[in-house]
Length: 450
Ligand code: FAD
Figure (cartoon, rainbow, N blue to C red):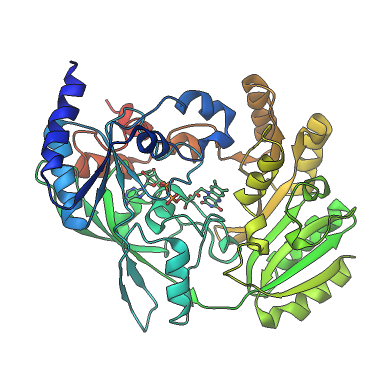
C-alpha cells in the first residue's frame, strides 16, 4: 500500500469515530462530488475527467470543520472545499485526490444589521435562499451568478466573479462587497479567525486554496422588484449603441444583456419568439421603464414589457444570461464552447474584425458591466469547438483586437484571471495553509514560489 493510501486509510479510521463528520464513500458519490461544470471546456474535460476524491466528508458545523482540518493536516491529506459544484474551471475538482468537504450543512444566516444591511452568513447557504430571506427584510444580494438558484454563497465568493447586478455593482473583488470573513486554518491545531475586509480580500476568488471560509460578511442592496424588458433591434450597431446608452443612463438597472440573433433560435422561448432581430434583455427598476422606452425609440428598437420578475419561476430573463446562455446553447448542441473577455473601446470595431476572421464560428453574447467605475461591455461569445490549436488562435486574435481575456479553459486562479500572481493570496496561503493541502494545484503563485 502506498504512503498516500496509508494516510487515507488512517484518516478514514479516525473519521469513522468522529461525531459531526458525515462520511460518503459510495463510488457514485465520489465520482459525482469530484466534478463541477468543467465540461463547458473541452480542454478541461480532457484534463479533469479522471480526478477523484478518495473520501467525501460533510461537517455538521464549524467545530466539525475544525476537527476535519486537524485530521487532514495530521495525515497530510489534501482537502478541497465544495459548495454546489457549479464552477466552470474545475475549481472544486480535487486534482490530487484526498478529501472533498461539502459545505451543505453550514447554512445559517447569522445576522443582518438593520441599519447598514450588512449580512453575515455561513458559506453553504444557497444564494437563492439568502436572496429570498433578504427580500423578506427589504434587502437583496447585489451580485448573483446566473446559477443563483443552485450556487452557494461561499462558492460564489471563492470561485465566482460577477453576473446579474454587475452593471450596477461591478465585480466581487471590487472593494465594498466583502466586508469580512470567518476562516478556519488548515493546521493540526486549526485556528478560527475573524478577518476584517482588508485581510479577507486575499481569500476572495482564491478557489478555497488559502483558508476554509466558515462565514462571510457582505454588503447588500435595497430590494427592488425588477421589471423585465425585451428590446429587439434590427441592426447590430444600433443594438450595441442602445446597450451602452442604457448603461450610461441614470436608470437603475440590474441586468443588460445583448444576444446576437442566431443565438435566439437555440434558447428557450422565455423572452418571446425569435425573429430576425438581435435582442436586448433588461432588468430595470419600475421608475426606469419609461426612460428605457424613450432610449429604445431613439435607437429604432421594439420594446416589450414582460412585467415584474417572478423569482419562483426559473424561466425569467435572468435565466437566459451570463453563462446560462452558454448552458442553453450547449443543451441544444454540445459542440459549442465559450470565451470570456472585456471588449476594448470602441467595441464595434473589435467585434467586426473578429467576425471578419471567424465568421459564425463565434456568436456574440454581451453583458454590460461596471468596470472601475465605467460602463464597459463584457463578452461571453459562443465558440464552435474544433480543436485546441484553433481555440488558441482565436484567443490570440481576441487579444490582438484589444480584448482582455479571462480564459475559461485553464485551472489556476491566476491564469483564469489577470494572469499575474497576487502576493497577498500566496501570503494568506502561507498563513492559513502552511503545508499546502487546500485545493492543491490551483494557486500558481504557491506552486511556483521559490
Ligand atoms: P463551487 O463550484 O462548489 O466552488 C467554487 C470554488 O469555491 C471552489 O474552488 C471551492 O473550493 C471554493 N469554495 C466553496 N466553498 C468554500 C468555502 N467555504 N471556503 C473556501 N473555498 C470555498 N459565475 C459567475 O461568477 N457569474 C455567473 O454569472 C456565472 N454563471 C454561470 C452559469 C452556469 C450555467 C454555470 C455552470 C456556471 C456559472 N458560473 C458563474 C460559475 C459558478 O456557477 C459560480 O461561480 C457559483 O457561484 C459557484 O458556486 P458553487 O456553490 O457552485 O461553488
